[in-house]
Length: 309
Picture: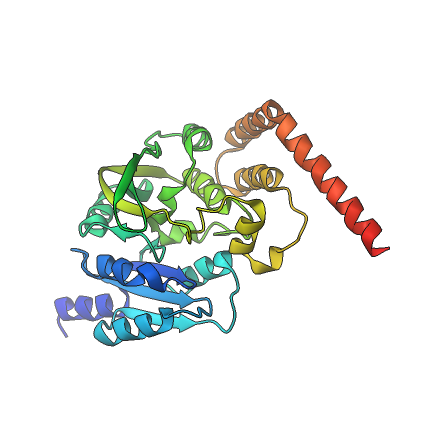
């Protein structure tokens, strides 16, 4: 067997890129999303779809597309286990060198994957590559451009981490292309609010972020989108249905996870100490927010306690 034939067989067994698409009742925009993925100019990928027991036409759509394209693998869960579990599950099923998440309602330009792969191939220091973003509505009409500001090209993890903490908002970079071996060093997506932002912060400790200057990612905002309803209760239930009616402190949890990610990272001790100090100062600066959250949680706990006694 020649080397070229052997390499071809290996590529067929293990595609270079894995795309994970967690979905729950995403039938309304799913076809458009799948079409944008399947027409990518870079074709060496697998598409893993994990359906959280959708009750709309998601299953029928996925089966129809799977019959047409052998790169698609479809899994259906017996119950809705929440977005965090589903996002992590598609990654655990992946085999590619590079990995990206895709939401069931967003769209990618045809050259998105190709450009991202080129960047990761050329620069081993880059761990996340994503493009600039346009926001679209439920009809696919562009609402606005969005500036992520996460082109983190600094050599030191300290500067990258601080810039990300100060800049990240919508967390579009979580849908970029990532090195799978680096992503495995993290706890992935947690079942708490802003866990995607915490993941990005941790990844910045391991390497650079590269922002493709072209606007190739079209993020859809619509009434059914998880990011549309900002209420704490809705967001908690989105990440994990078991969170419903739990007493939580989202801002405190987010800051706690930032501390833990720094501690867990492989950066130098003096760099860790510097970032601990930075996070402490950020916490003190917003002390009213954190103390207010703690007081509210205490009040909720006492009310719940007295109700049950």
